[in-house]
Image 1 (tube, rainbow, N blue to C red):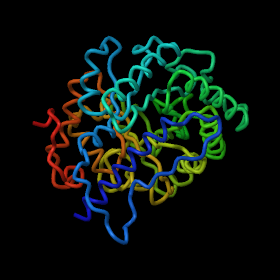
Image 2 (cartoon, rainbow, N blue to C red):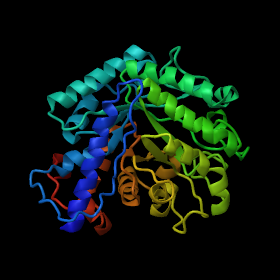
Image 3 (cartoon, rainbow, N blue to C red):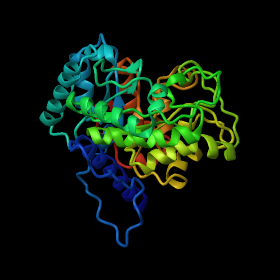
Length: 373
């Protein structure tokens, strides 16, 4: 009973953070701090028998879909599972701020009509350069280009970006990139990184987080524990970064550390093997040894989010339902399902009903969602 009660508190706190992120609206806002791991209480509160596990598990899921898939297909999944987040891409809304706003309004109306206890977070990637899903004048240039102006310029540009995103109805930007690019064989980061030196990158990451907050949107550090030192692309195959733990602490960790100190709302954990950080031979997002470093080593108190569970490197070894269970077991608070097929995403959400014993804390109550029957 004790473990179940603490797990329920942890889930509720994550849902509270969802609401806090959506309520961001002031140009300068206080940091959102949430203790996902609830402290041991002096006396435990009684278990709320009306607590809806299905709705709260749904709140931890982030879905996306192909641009050709319309509202009639997406709506049932959102409605049945009380989905916590939607990740939009240019083909979904045409690339305009008005297109994002229309989707955002539609999503929040549905959440209200369904008497959902939490809003639906609207997310997108607006890093800068070509990785800017809203094609508007407020989109910043490539991070490597922004870097030349120093922290003050980065904060200014990200403030403009954040303000534009907020006006378009976006709640959480999946940026900035905190990776330090030290491997020329890298096939995914490139100019998305501020640079090749931790001394350069770290203060710029902090400035980017502050700028997005100035504009009124949440900020997400990625791709923990760092992709810049690995060759390859996890969308194709899971890369390996052979750096030692001391090297990682000197090179990749400072950017994330500075971003956390600046008040980042979320950190995205990616699919990369870093043998120096764990002994389980699992991609970082599935490794409790890696994920837990965000709490124990960096003191992060916000939301830990998986990178897309539909990347090619993951899909080659694990199905989306399997990957979802593994990511939750490792300590991720939100899951980017990342599938282009809502029916497959529904299978991943339903998979919680058949979780192994190690995930008993997530499934302490019988599932009542129709997808699980």
